[in-house]
Length: 248
Image (cartoon, rainbow, N blue to C red; front, top):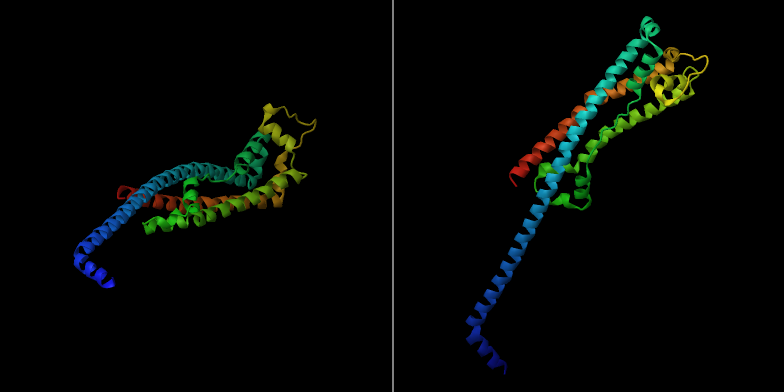
């Protein structure tokens, strides 16, 4: 029986071999086509993601420019206020209203750069970052949150100093919030006391001077160091994405 089977196989081997070969080739082609489809779908998905991330980075550049402009104006006001402290004659001649408004403009604006990162966060959380073929872009995106943290840490330092400044205003016997609010927001119905005192004498307080100069120094550092670096990083990633998207 076995001999008959072997004889049959020997006789039919060329025919079986051809059938097996055709079957194997068909399987390999199907696998290759499937791989091509998967690669095409992945490439299309990545292109869409990179386009969205590129738009986010472009938006972040615009938001940075707006915040940078606001910060520069604030620093200019801070310098005017510090110069005012250094000039007793100028302090005597400035009105209570002008003093309060300058104080508001110089030290009560919040420094916080708006950031759009939802598409990048989704790419990272989904594990899609590892599939990006461009190593330069992958490195930029992988380190992006670290780059942002350097800026955010400095802004957090400013927030803490601002808290100390606001606390000092509330607690200092030389500063009247009632007088301040009446002069800055006269339409809010906060009347002055019968014998209002001037807030201008607060400039003689050394703690007050130390806080506002510290704030100025911290914000000046953001303006001259951290914002330029953030802008440089944004431009670099936008240019890399533009190059990749033009030559997918």
